[in-house]
Image (cartoon, rainbow, N blue to C red):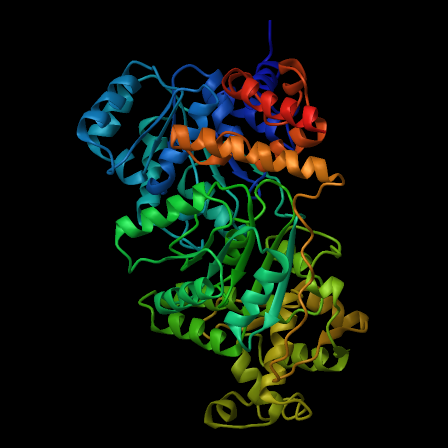
Length: 606
């Protein structure tokens, strides 16, 4: 009798065209197939979708995938259809007759997977339909949306707890690429997954090169980045405001780039048209607000650039994760200024969020600013923020171009001691006033003008102390305790540092706007042989023709990675072609001869 794991591997190889599972995929699939619940945290491009798609194919019934991404559902359905699977979506953009036809197919169990938005799923008539239908599992994608601790909270997601109450015997799998420890805890509690199992596959995206530069001429900096490293690549440029999106897109077009704008101020038709072009054409740069990007499956996005800092590390991690989903090299550039920090803080203070939520947002923003000013490996700071671990990567700007640092041992001791002497319940601004010896009525009331750290930090300016404190937060020597004052509290690492008196190097603060030379991008698609490069171009042209015939994005036919392997290996038969990663049985049947003809013609010419 074939085991679930053997059956899953057979589906992976024959349907998806991949030789083996990665990481914990096989274990997650077996867990869900057996009817148990799961929470899965896996980096973008790590293969999360297989963790629910394959169980839905093995278990009897229809897999229901809950996703907030109505605009992208059809592309997801197209990609599954290319694999020979029976997939559909139900959303507000569809005609009534089409929705009713899909509902009938759900009731009859004729589909493998159906994508729905949470708003649709929670409608009484849809829940009644599900009770009348054979359901294999519920997959809750972008699960961080359920948590108020998360960076993209969506109220409808909180109501998905109803699935546990109304369908207790059907396995639920929640998935995300972006969630810190409080968010993960919140997801598990809100979706009633405590009786299931949590799988954390790590956060590292080793193919992404991270670079953060001081901002001084943002449009010129980003143009230099694109022209020098990504002249023929697709990418995303994120801006804070709609006006900046429009201005930057227009300017990039004037400089000879194929740039398109995307923001909530545009008509739905214009947004949809630009998104369609980005997904289906090569060498398109999307200039966008954060309204664009979640769920983008385009695998060959080679760069993400931020003209303004995002609001927290979660947002930065998720947005940069839209690059290099195919595992090939990609670059992430962020331009940073104190003015951006002031604006983000202003957004927090002027929001209508409760004080407790504002404290969370301040803490998250401070951690991002700590990342910007870190003297250590960027990747290591990101991983440790999420509770992961890592060694210096050798593939970020601070590893490749170490910043100017100074011996910050005494400064750090003073900062930590000041937090401790004042009761570990006051924020950065107050602690700096103590260190600079600036007394006021509140300080006198608390008696902090008499503590030993009062006035001992006059060798640094307020801005320098701000930088020092942010770095101590980034190093996890200090954390925000969530008290009414948003106080800084020493962590065990901070206490150990004070006891051990080890030397600490910190990034030197500079008010000057000096550009750091960007690292030249590693070419994502390198070829040792010029003939291979020409064959790759011919294969891409064939892929584009096929995609246009079927009105689907080219990448749903084959990823660039698969075309590169075809160009290098040059299979001469369908049997040989089946050994290429990403070439499953259905794609061999549909496209094998067409691509073999291109390879054959190339071999005759060479």
